Length: 135
Image (cartoon, rainbow, N blue to C red; front, side, top):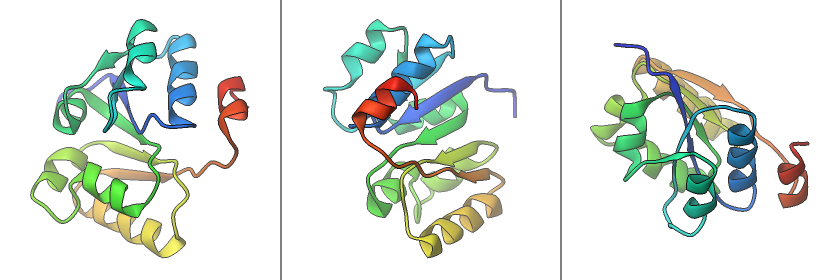
């Protein structure tokens, strides 16, 4: 697989949007996608590439950061349990920043590794203000 230089960010909610904006402000090229379009505009204005859907984002990015609310959203975005899962995670590093139960995270990591991907569990805590401040 050819090197994919961009970083993808999926999940632009309360904490995800400011986190992604801080990456952009720091000079990191970023491709973004969110289930709702509301948070996309400020990121596009800051220079993010906007993916039309998760497949588009995964096709463009070697590393994908997920800041999603729960296990169901994570599974849906990754296509876990479907044929899309292999295509989306193979050869990529998936960084899960949402807070998930340990059993779920461990199983997800095993599934990603089994498809040839890498998994980083990096849960965060806090709220919008610390995320905006990059704290």
